[in-house]
Image (tube, rainbow, N blue to C red):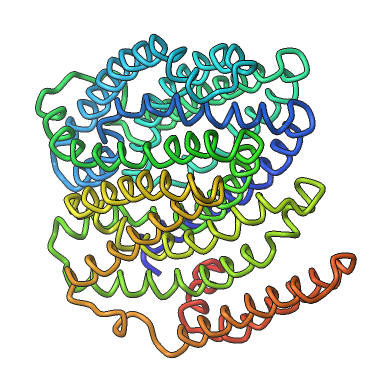
Length: 494
C-alpha cells in the first residue's frame, strides 16, 4: 500500500472516530440541556447560532482556498510561500470578522425582535456576543486547521476537535447550573479558544516552514486566496442562508418548540452526514495535487471508486437512520415525538442524496471548479426560501422541513449529473448490479418498517424495534462480500 493510500486511510478513519465521538457527546449534551434549560431555550440557542453565523460572510472562502494552496505549495520549491499564506489569512480573517461582528451586534435587537418571543429576547441578546466571539476565534483557528488539512494531517485536526468537544461538554455541565443558557455560550467560546491554541501549536510543529518567524504579509497570497475564495464565498453565503432562513421560518410558522425538536433532529442528521462526508473530504488536497500534474485518468478512476465505496456505506447507514427515527426519539426525548421523527425522516432521505454528491463536490473543490458550485448553491438558497414561505403558510413547520429537503436534494442531484458529464462518465459506468441490489433491499427495509409502525399496536414498541434491527441485517451479505469493502478492511488492518 502506497504512502498516499496510508494517509487517506488514516485521515478517513480518524474522521469517522471524531464524528462518532462527537455524536455521542452531543447525545448526552442535548439531553442534559433539554432537562436543564428546556426545549424553548434550546430553540433560542439554535436561533442565535444561526443568526450569529452570518458573521461567516467575513470568511470570503479563504480557509477553503488554504487547503488547496497549501497542498500545491508543498509540491513547489519555494517553501517561503507557506508562512506568507498563513499570516495573510490570519490578518485578513481577524479584521473582517471583527468588523462584521460589530455590525451584527448593532442591528441585533431589531432583527431578533422580529422572530424571537419577547420574553426570550433579553436572553438571546445576552448570549449573542459570546456566540460571535466564538465565531471570530474559530475563524482564526480555522486557518490553522486548514493548513493541517493541506499537509494531509487531517488526523491531527480531527483529534483536536475531539478534545475540544470534551472542553465544551465539561464547560457546559459546570457553567449551566450557575449561568443557565449564558453558561452554554461561555463553554462554546472556551472550546473555540482551545482549538485556536492547540491547532496553532501543531501547525508550527509539523513543518519548519510554518514557523512564526516566516509569517509575513503578502499581497500576492491575498490575491491568490481572494481569486479562489470570492467564488467559494458565494457558495458559503448561500450555505449560511440555508440554516438561518429555515430556522427563522420555522420559528415563525412552527413555533420555538418545533424549532427545538428540529434542532435536535438536525444534530442527529449532521453528525451522521459528517460521518461520511468528513471521511470523504480528505481527498481535496489529493485531487488538488493530481489535478496540478494533469493525471486525468487517475482522477476518473479515483472518482468512480469513491462513489462505489461511499454508496456501500451510505445506503445501509442512511436506511438505518430513517427506520430508527422513532427509537432515537424515544431514547433521546423520552417519547416518540412526531415533530422530531418527521424532521429526522425527511432530512434523512435528503441527506442520503446529499452525501452521494460528496465525491463530485470535493473533487470540484480540489480542481478549482467553483462556478458550478456557485450556481448550485444559489439555486438551493432560492428554492429553500421561496418554497419554504409557500409551504410554511399552508403546512406550518412541516412545510418548512419539506422545502429544505427538496432544495438540498435537487441541488445535490444537479451537481452529480453535471460533474459526471465533465468527466464523461455516466451513472451506469459508476454503479453496477451489486449497488442496484442494495438499493432494492433498502426500499424493502423501509417499507417493512413503515408497515410495522402502521399496523402493530403502539404498546408493542419493542417488537417494532426488533423488526427494525433484524431487517437491517439484510444488507450484510451483499456489503461484506463486495471487493471494495474487502479492500477497505484490508487497508484498515494494515
